Length: 241
Length: 338
Image (tube, rainbow over all chains, first blue to last red; front, side):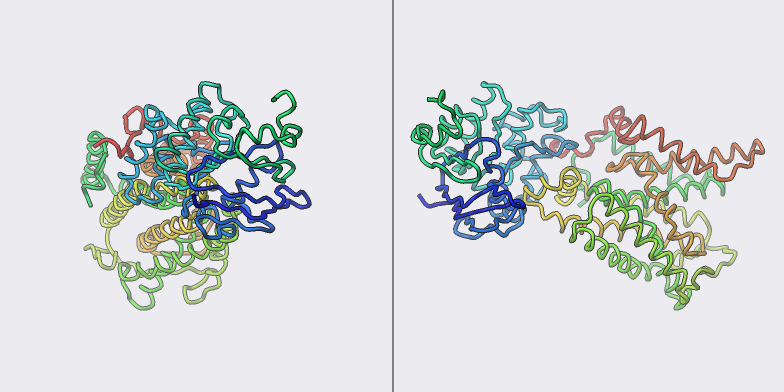
């Protein structure tokens, strides 16, 4: 399969702190690709580089064959990359359906049609019943699903999910794992996710990249990566084996 | 077009609107001269509040200098009329163009270079102040000694030149307010309106959804400044005199925003309700005091302050939202019900 996203020797410094150091990897089209690593490893910074929030100090990022590492976040989204935020940021003062409609309006200029589209996505994510609620009244798990719905509404080829399972109960995790799996299999959306919940990573990721102190220390199939001694030492701990 | 505007608006909301409009249209039949001038003032604030609300209520950019656009609209048309005999309706496009040019320049400076939040508000004050000081020394429009429109005792109403009796001005400002209301209603349910609300709620998240925030904020200030200018045209031809110290004064800008703030920022009815309540009550208060022989200058400002305190403390979202709930109009923008 062709590579949808290619990250080549990307580095990012924040006044002396090397947050991402010379990281390279590619995400094949149709994959569910996980980035794991301890807190402060540079996972979210890597996401922000891909999403156009920051420009890398060096290296390049290609999406569907085009350089995107100098584009603004809105242009990156228009190219087909949707994202969620680790600390969720739904439009709190708007209803659930309005939140998702705004995403859908990117490619569907007619508000009524965009609302229809939003309703389909909300049904898929099990939020349809709460469509008239203000986003501010939702619980954390619902807000996380709302973020996924909103990003999904922009019609992405690649979906960046930043810890959408953190802080959720096991049943809620299973639910969102199922959603991600379905998006991937039914709609062919490639998924790049940052996750700490190893159980989820092991069950859905086709490939895993491990970051530590900003550098990639391992990459491969989930079963192989979790047995990698460097990964065990830096992140998982001996008891994980 | 009309079908699209009415789409999804509940029937009882429509009924209420038609009723309100009917009362306002019939008002000159039973209102005396004084009441009519109060109504004109109310509608003037409803109109300017509506225009200001596009920038702040919809797109979340707090302008504290909307007197600039009123003043430009007023001065441009008044000067064209006084110097060249060009009527207000012909002069209005020029007034709008100049107002929009100023609004767009301020917007470009602010939004392009990341001047946001309080700093944006300060920038808008600064430009209104520039205009105030500039017009004070602008000899072509008589500087600080004021620009006066020729006045006579009008027996007939000349709508082309906006010369006539209060009742004509009343219908002009009523029509303007209705048009502004309809435009805002259309904007709020359009794609632009959704994007504005996204920017208002969380600009960073809006960008990550592919919204070109700079462009949409520019649309907001362009439409808002362009819509404010005709209020200036009305102001000039209704009051017949313009002084930079009054027209561009920051208190004029604050008066514009009080209505929507008290009525409900970001709502369609907020600016209208706010204008009725504030202006209506303060005029009533003044009359009451006069009737009891109490002479208290500045009492309206004190009253404004009191209202603002009350609303901020008890109803931070304004008076309209709880009203809307009671009247079951809070789903006015429900596009899903067909």
